[in-house]
Structure formats: structure tokens, C-alpha cells
Length: 297
Image (cartoon, rainbow, N blue to C red; front, side, top):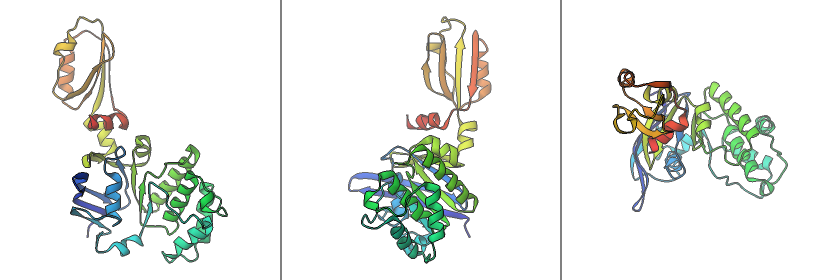
């Protein structure tokens, strides 16, 4: 039996001639905190909506808990929690009524303590009507609704939109605790600092396709280095002949300094530099933001 909670194989979705996603494949293991990153329009929400059986794929397949997302959608939904990017709620209900109503669908008729606990953490007034809530408070309702039944899998689509920094921090702590308890978290976001702080593994989505999927530590430490070279003078001819296999995203910072991303043999880099007059050299792990931009160039 597979230990993967989510299994996506060659998934595509087209809207007429427009591309939603194309040939997407990835696996998310049990207990992972997995990041799904890309700018708006990259295909993140389309992928999630297919997983939730809210839209149908054009081709390919997806499974959650080993169950087919099309045939077994009802069985799957009882075991997961979902936070959409946009809050759509029953506006006429009070917050407490809405959350209790939602919990009943999961067989959680005695959910009051859990609702009270989560509302306290996220600073949400349970007695207000949903129609009177701000966008951020509506997002809190979505988050509590997703967590109240202690799901095995959390699927989060831009969960921090509308939340102030303090509540974002509390949410991250809450998600971390749920993950430690064994909940698998699929975290979709375009905010790279969030993904870097929370996730161990990540998939980068570009124009409906996954361009890279790996552990964040591997992306930062083994695949790419950020190199900055400060030469002692401007007469090195570096703008013409400084080319090494594996050197990308080259740009000049000043008349004497250059910066580039490097994925080649570090020995070749050192050999190439050894015959030049250098004042300073730094080779460092780039932040996830720079790696992300590198794959989007």
C-alpha cells in the first residue's frame, strides 16, 4: 500500500483552448508539510479544485488516501479539511451556528469545545453574523471549519490572504501543531517566505506545469549557488570572456563586481577565477525567492 496521501499523475485541464494545467504529476507523502508555489494564474487553484472534485480534469488522474478523486469524492471529503482562496459562507448565519452546522456533516455534533479553542487562538468572535465580518475574519471562519473535525489532510489555497501578521503567525503555529499530530498539509501559496518557513518539500508551478519539485534544503544547498565576485580593477575583460558551464542569470553590479547563479562544478569555477585579480568572493545559498525567480526566467 502506498504511503502517499496525494498522488497526481499526468493531470491536465483545459478551458476550451486555454490552458489550466498541463501534465502535472506529484506525490505528497503521509505527514508531509508540502508547499505548492507559483504566482496567481500558474495553475495552483485548478489543481486543488480537481483534487476536491469541484472541476473535472481533461486527462490524467489523481488519488487521495489511495482513492480516486472522481469516483470516491464523498469518502475523501470526510477525511480532509479545505481552506479556499476566497471565503464563501452563509452570510445570514452567526459564526457559531455556521461552524456547528459544518461540523455536523463530519459527525462532530459535540464540537463546541474545539470551535471555542480555535476561535480563541485566531481571535474570532463567534457571536457575530457572518455578513458583518471583514474579509480576514471570514478567512478565520474558513480555517476553523477546515480544522474542527481534526482532518487527516489539510488542503490550503492561499490561506493567509486577508489575515494580519499576528494572526498569520498564530495560524502557522496551529498548522505546525496539526502537522506534528500527523496531519498532512498541502500548502498552496505565492508568498515564498511562508513556504520556506513551513514546508520541507516544494513544487514550483509555472504556466500550468511543474518546473521543479524537491526538498527546499536541496534546492538551496545543492542545486544552485549565488556567486558574487569583486575584482580589484575594471581591466579584467570579464564582460567578454567570463563564461563557465553552469553559470546563469549573470548580471553586473558595478564596474568591478558581478553576480550570477551557479549550478556547475565548483572546481571549474575556482579554476576560472584563479588567474584573475580578485578583491573579494562570496558563494552562498540563495534564498527561496531567488531560486523561484531563477526558474521563472
